[in-house]
Image (cartoon, rainbow, N blue to C red):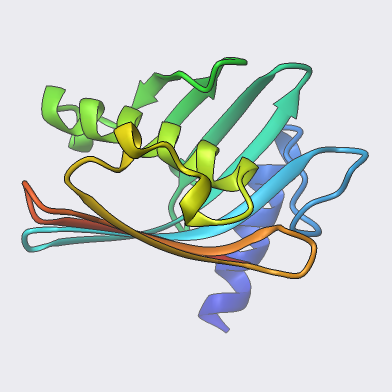
Length: 157
């Protein structure tokens, strides 16, 4: 029952902001949804990443199960990430830098069809593994930072 209520709340919040809460990706709307797990030291965060394309720019949000926005960001046509909003709990310069790097990497992986297509400069001090389906859509991604020890996982919803 709890999961159903959380799903309805997320769907309502995502739908109210113009985010597509339906299919994983639709060519007409160009929106993506992924589950997200972030582990750093003793902190574990579970959330949903929603990414929508507006022309050449992408806008996204990371929200928890209750629809609370943790991160709002945009990606320009060159793939550079800009954090627009960061929840006060996460508001640390280090976290913001790591998020910008990871969001740029996630965007690159979404547009690629394998990890091998990710430029080596973005893979520095990272272990990356991912899976793509037969339509070259990314279905899962794992990013392991060496310093500091931090893990970020994406999985299709």
